[in-house]
Length: 248
Image 1 (cartoon, one colour):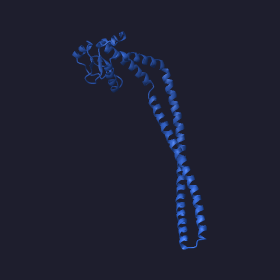
Image 2 (cartoon, helix red, strand yellow):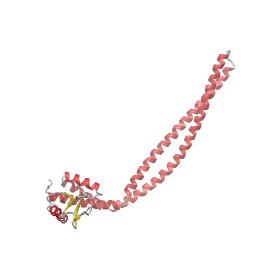
Image 3 (cartoon, helix red, strand yellow):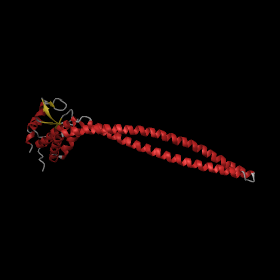
Image 4 (cartoon, one colour):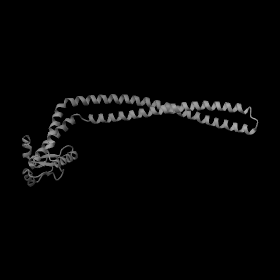
């Protein structure tokens, strides 16, 4: 059962803030490596998709080229057949009909030959693009593996500390009032990870704005959750800071 006294609510909030700040420090040691790894993984996925698209284009162009080749051969046979038939026709009407068939077949052949050139051109361009994409894939994958290795080494170096802090966080969360935790998370995300701060030298420990003496006295009573009027962070008294190691 949660201890819902305001003092303990504040203690739990300040305790999880300390843990989260330490976790943030550990993560900052990794620098921008996690983001770099994520970006490189996204690039590799994009290149893979491009390679697949290029392979499909080349494959389809080859099919279309081969089909056009076959059709040109068939049309050549038809033209030859029609020309032979013209030698044996008995009327101008039949001769003209065969002539139209020959012209249509020749026109179709000319178009197919143009299509052949287009398919060949697309295939050559696709092969060049594929070669470029494959080289880029190799380079990007190599860089990704290097960055992953660096990240693993750094993560391993701080693994025990990170696991310990995560465990502490998991133990604290169930003890924090749900609405308090939601408020804490909302402020923390908006304020670069810092949601709960002590008063230092009469000022907010987050934005360093002056806190009126009367309000400091009220905060020290630990009877209500107060926030900084300027930055909105939750303020805790020196008593909460000093007694953080005595969380019940």
